[in-house]
Amino acid sequence: QNNNNQNKQKNTDKKKKKKFKDKLEQKLFIIDLDNLINGTEERTTIMIRHIPNKYTTQALLDELNVYCKNKYDFFYLPIDDENECNLGYAFINFIHPLHVVHFYHIFIHRKWNMYKSNKECDLTFAKFQGRAELTANLEKNMDQIEDKKNLPLVLDVLNPAKIELAKKYFEEIKKNRS
Image (cartoon, rainbow, N blue to C red; front, side, top):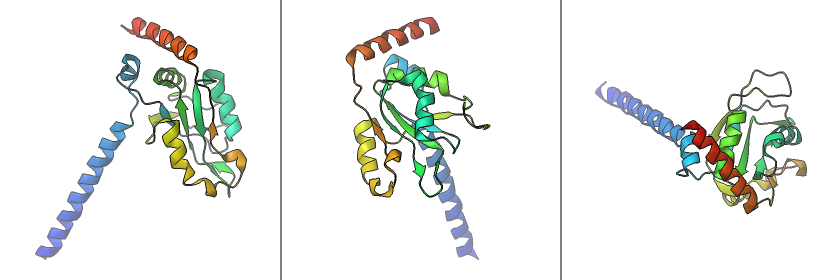
């Protein structure tokens, strides 16, 4: 009986530690706009969540590009080839952290335009950051992607003039918030 109680206590302790660890990890991925604006946050890769499963890569890109064309250099919407639907999340890497702020303002909690869905967009920082990390991580699983149209989109859009424009735009936002 005593051994049984000790095992139950160990299991309870493990569950509490896991819950604490999960909450701590969740905090690591929360997007803090103030830190992005003041330059203390430099992450640029976002996980877009709660995407309706019927969205294709092209349909989602069409919707995103209205607001952020030429502001990202990597995009990937994982597709279940067997069921021909997306998995409900995507990754986008912006060329500058300030582009994340603009994207966040437009898409957080936004309902999706296509397909009647009650899903609202959610955004978090991704575990893997930057085009190089994303590409390296996905290279391990490339053989599982059957259809070439479902491959990640990797772009070469880095343009310093656009980054300077973004900085000016977000400096204005920062001034107006103060």
